[in-house]
Image 1: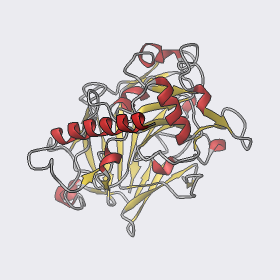
Image 2 (image 1 turned 45 degrees about the horizontal axis):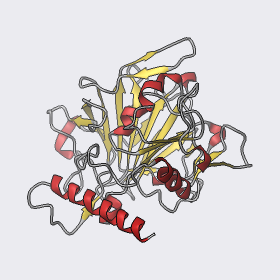
Image 3 (image 1 turned 90 degrees about the vertical axis):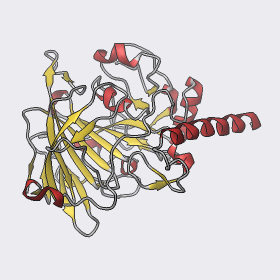
Image 4 (image 1 turned 180 degrees about the horizontal axis):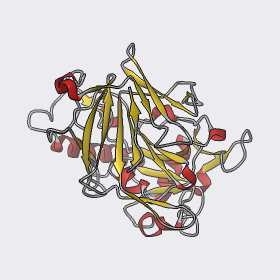
Length: 348
């Protein structure tokens, strides 16, 4: 036990030193450690804790999800059947006794996940994932065969099912289950220096109201993703009191089953992405390694047009304004809709 504690301390110190080495000159000795996900002040130990990227459903009968309010970055992307799915990037998963429910993954979620160097948690997948999910750099925990028709099922014994819902909507995992599975598989619980990006989003110094863009910043108190996600009709309403966008799903508040908290985001991004249908079953692919597509950035009741670039799996997706400058996000959580190009967001 003493050896395990010592090994953990050494691991934390090693990664912390790596993070400090990446900091700009003069910042390595800063008193405050800020989250790469939200820019909020966190402990140094939390800063090097490896996040999870967990697949969660948007199905109406599967609501609410548990632990989803802890997502610092929440992705929503379309799947076959014209139904979307979510991937929650959660760094403070420790202590959560019920996370999920957990659903299957798709190949195009993996490049979105890897830029955070997470432990990917899913309940199977599809055969289009086979070549990527089985690579040694991917650390995943799967409740069944990892690509649906085959593969391993790493950590499958750590999932549990509830009796209040029918399968496949009743599979969950806990923080203890994640820790146990990670240890069994030899996965690091701290970020891996060879993959981890200490720099991701660029955050504003202070509050970014988008006023600097003048007339190019449109009013966006209401954001409607109904054309992008026609099943969930995901939408956001800006709350001036909190300065956040409150999310709805299926016309109701999108809440966390653990605490009843409605999901709320400081930043909302719509990322138009080229895509194709792969087969008669309707399986999709998204070209999320790209440098030429556009979208919108929403914050503080305003919106600007953006373009985005992602050049490799482990590199961050970077968003630029129409002047070619990287956008500056506000402190807090971020929602990202990876939208099929040709389906538009509406806002007013």
